[in-house]
Length: 102
Image 1 (cartoon, rainbow, N blue to C red):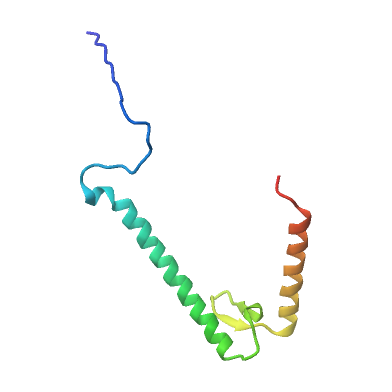
Image 2 (spheres, rainbow, N blue to C red):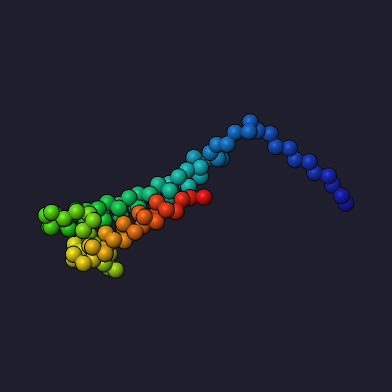
């Protein structure tokens, strides 16, 4: 037995948020994004506070003087390490100037 099936979709041609009519379903994705964002920004704030603490304990130092250990602890780099970091930044900047995006 063969049947013909025709489906027609009508719309205004607009792109918008999905609406199921059930707000708890419609906003689940938004809640997940908000929760992930909140966790990320809390982590950023914690790292910032740790850096501020290191700088407060070491007057005259700047963010360029701070290094990070594999254990994610911040410290003031010794002069040799600081010089190497500065040379690396200069090299990267030179590369950026010479390599143009396609």
